[in-house]
Every structure is written in structure tokens, then in C-alpha cells.
Image (cartoon, rainbow, N blue to C red; front, side):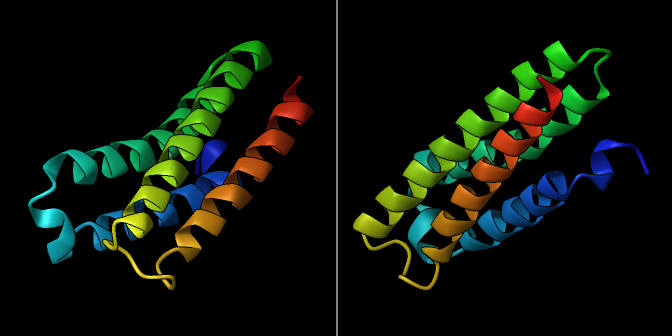
Length: 115
């Protein structure tokens, strides 16, 4: 396993991306291509940037990508809040927003440890 695959934040972001893909297969998202695709892109961006950053040769480069991942988590959280507000997702599904916040906190810890 590569180094990034051992990171708990990367592992949780993979699960989050899977959950977002499952969520966006529902009927509510089938006609709203823009929101569906943006949710998916944001979710995939999180784990992708963690992996890319961890594989780069310096902590400075890694931290830059971790900040990008943190931005993608904020974007994803916002899109989930919008989805909740327009009744595409239930309060139960809104637990994904909490997961975004936790991943964001984990990323901040990773950033601090690499600075």
C-alpha cells in the first residue's frame, strides 16, 4: 500500500466519495445533471488531492494539495446543504455534511503536521 493509502483521512474520503455516488444515483438527481456531477467531482477531488499531495516530493507541495482537498470538502458540504434545502436529500443523508466537517478537521491536522 502506498503511503497515502495508510492515511485515515484518505480512507474516509474514499468512503465519502462512494457514499456520494450512491446518493446521486437516486431519482432526485437524475434530471439535475449539474448538481449531481458537481457533487461527484467535489467528492472525487478530495481523495485525489490527498493522494497527489502525499506522493509529491516535498511537504510544501503536499500541503498545497491538502489545502485544495480541504477546499473541495467545503464545496461538497455546501452542495449537500443545498441538496438538503431543495429536498433532494433527507436529514439522515445530511449526516454526510458532518462527515465533510470531520474530514476537513482531519485535513487541517495533516496540514499542520506537514508544515
